[in-house]
Image (cartoon, rainbow, N blue to C red):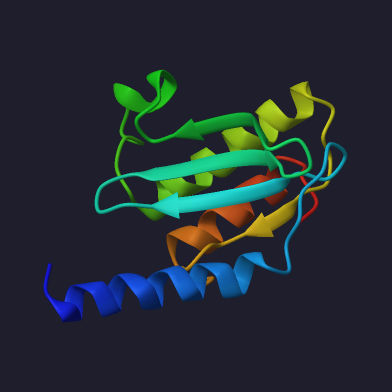
Length: 123
């Protein structure tokens, strides 16, 4: 790896940690973490006190695989938010701490948050 790639990775890591240092999830109010790759979206509810993932879903999951929601776009992000809200309700979770990671609160990241709000979660 050349130095520019190392620098880019370092800057990304620092941006992620700058956002996450203020966010802590627990059993009653877990952290809703969103990650987007080049083709897919991943959403998790994380309890940081016990270091466990409570529930997770993604556009690669079984429920989205054979549908039009199997790619990274706003309608898929909204459906992902609705699905994570449904899974959270099954675990008796009503409020979460939204963790956007290194990504701006814009586009598909905002659509996930909007879908989760519509599903009944308080962010």
